Image (cartoon, rainbow, N blue to C red; front, side, top):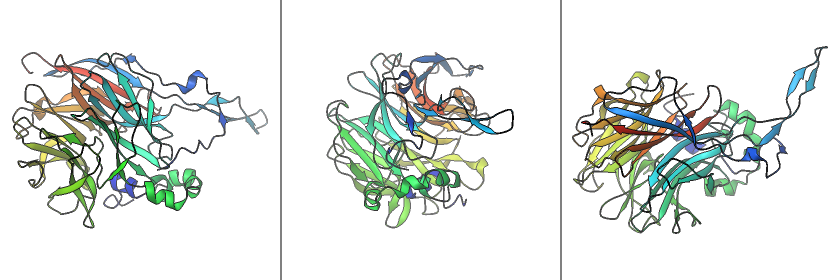
Amino acid sequence: MDNKKYNRRNFLKISGLTTMGSLLTHRLPANNKHIHSVVNQETIPVNTPQNRIAEIMKIKLVSKEPGKYLIIGQSIDENGHPKATEPFIEPNRYLGWPSITKTVEGELLIVYSGDRDSHVCPWGKTRLIRSSDNGKTWSEPETVNNSPLDDRDAGIIQTYKGTLIVSWFTSLAYANPNWKWAYQKYARVAEKIPEELKRYWLGNWVRRSEDRGKTWLEPSRTVSSAPHGPIQLRDGRLLYVGTGSWEDTESIVVEESKDDGISWQVISTIPTTTGNARNMYEPHVVELKSGKLVALVRNEPEDREKCFLLQSESYDGGKTWTVLHETPIWGYPPHLLELDNGWLLVVYGHRRPPYSERACISRDEGKTWDTKNEITLAEAFNGDLGYPASTQLDDGSILTVFYQQENQGEPTSVFTAHWKLKQGDS
């Protein structure tokens, strides 16, 4: 596959679907315990990360969706003939790409794409889990989006009006022959979806709730998409920095909403040295107390050793931006948060050995990054990990959500790392 043409973001967007049921036909009864998520399990890595400036207090499994369909397997009898085995439950569901927010009511909300077979499949749904005790316990997942397509990469914020806004994008990647293994498995699923339904749902979306997530209003389209969604500026505007096609060019697009997320308008693009963002995508932005905006962007050049985050700044509320420039941070994609002390935190996946979830601090509004004291939040088995996002709790500690495997070889689940900067470094 040509990575220039088919990076993850662009390929998935041009090419997932509705929950029309699994290809497996045998279901457990609706009241079977296996349909529930496994939550609130504390896990301590074999090698707890040791960091110079941070203390990792707890790693917690917060959502793991067990399999819910019966599978009839096969074995070989004494004569060498295949025979059916006793039915068994399919493997756990694949969960990925989470985001987190803290509401004014003190509730923590995590959204992610859940109930999946794998990284690319038709069944993805936007799931939401809640905690009212600073992340000690979490609710069973609620389904926010279950469109006719594969619902992926959910972001979430609460606006000043109390509105919850969830962002996501839909995909038909599994129906594209370039994803050979997924196409062989799911092509017939895609064929059953009417073309008009595909055309209507394929794209980038936000959805609002005005009653703390009890009900969700009709979704609205956006031009671009990014894993962790929009932010709200101090002037009340919502700002969404994402990847999308604008004026026939794939760009880092900046959109704003002045009506609490109901409608969105493009106000600028972030300039790149190439004028094309095909290998620069999945950005996130933060507004600092000074009013400066800092955006970081995932970068995947042909030389994989140079996947350093790219950075741009805006000093006029997002109307104009500096040309993207390279940081010393290797990893992707980013999530930014200004801490109470004014320092800037970025978290990201380190998707090469040693595989891990990581964080880095800037004490000067992003002018420099303290990579000498890069923080390892959690270790992982392989590169199917990351998309971390953080929120700061009232006691100053930080809760970071991410996805990776709990046990080697199984589908991924959603975790949190509860951590704090050490005394003298906060």
